Amino acid sequence: MSQENKTAYDISKDQLRPSDTRVMDPVSYTFAWIGGNISVAIFMVGASLVPPAGSLNLVQAFLALLIGLTLTAIVLTINGAPGHKYGIPYVVQARPVFGTIGLKLPALLRGIPALVWFGVQSWVGASAVNVISARMFHYDNLIVVFIGFVIIQAILAYTGLKGVKWIENIGVFVIFFSVVYMTYIIVTNFGASISENLIEYKGSWGMPFITAITASIGFSTTIVTNISDFMKDVSKSVKTPFTAVLHWIAFVPTNMFLGLIGLMTASITGEWDPIQLFTKTLPNSPVLIVSLIFIAFAQITTNLYNNLVPASYVLIDLTKMDYKIAAPICVFLSIATFPWKIASVGAFLVFIEICTAFFGAIFSALVTDYYLFRRRNLDIQDLYSPTGPFVGINWRGIIAITCGAVIGLIFINVSWFVSLIPTSLIYYLLTKYTALSPSFNKGTIFEK
Image (cartoon, rainbow, N blue to C red; front, side, top):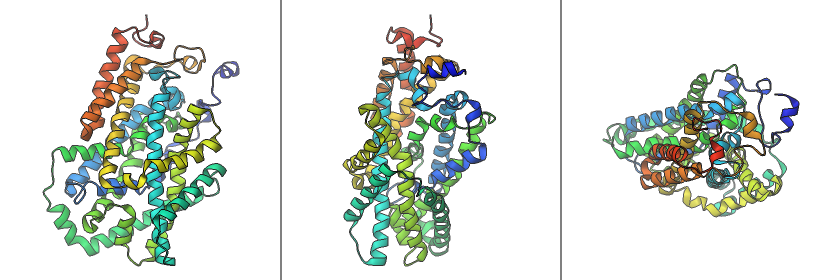
């Protein structure tokens, strides 16, 4: 692409990644995602699948996690293909489906769950700090600690996180060591309980099993939506189908291991809160204190990068305010999501199921447009042109994801799966048989 053409595009905001500027090789990309997957939230997912919160036995929970996470690796690759092929981020990939103005709706749908996740993970981090405070200083006040935890994150959001990013990298190994140690403690001391509560338990292969698969996908459904933001940096020497292998390696073993620890510990302790899981499994242990310290720091760094940044960009897009103002505002907006309520087992699962309905619909519209309508061919000039065919609102995409999400919500236990076909079918019919948003037909099989 010539320099003259570059200046005609809005690439200062929506960065284009030519082949010679990509920095991620297969190893660095895989390890980046492995580090990002070391999260206490997967403990909550695993713990929610078995009694007392869920109704699956060990084999059923294992298979549900395996199927759900494997499907996640596949759909990540499918939706990230245009980002990898053309070096474009999600906001550019989605322009043909929603339009430059219509994108505000899916952006808002991406921003709200990010705020909720930010609040929940802040609550988890504050809970870890509170346990440390109670054990070491005999001060136990979770509300005060939570407020302080949120204020610290607001300050860091304003000043930047470069100085503490290294803590997350160390924390990954500390938490991993802790869960390995927990595995040893569990198997050694509670093998009989696991056999009785999980192996001999009859469980269900019916709707609870399907719901568990949906929850396993829903855990990463926001990442599935904007995976092009990451795959655009992967070297073009890596074939796109091979990234499915990288995604599987990065997502499946790590999340399977952490999820299984969560469900085994929950079956023993009756708790599904990750902090309570650590506390009851590692009582009066120095490993507990060290683990909780790094859990708290990991929540801060991962939370700010993975949740605050997307939410802040939505607010910036809607209000045009500066990031240093938008980010702290989003930190405090997260409190309004009542994270202490979401962090209960029932609300947590409902939240995931609602998210999967909306993001399943968005995923369906994106892949229908790219694979069926455009046959994997995109025009970069059209995508970035300020006066091109994708300026405005593509009402067909908006209507399709709205209808698909509503249908998914009706069948909320399997919302992700149910939202896919209706969204794709409605989008196809509106595109083929209506005169809505005709300029968006450019480059498709429907172009006249």
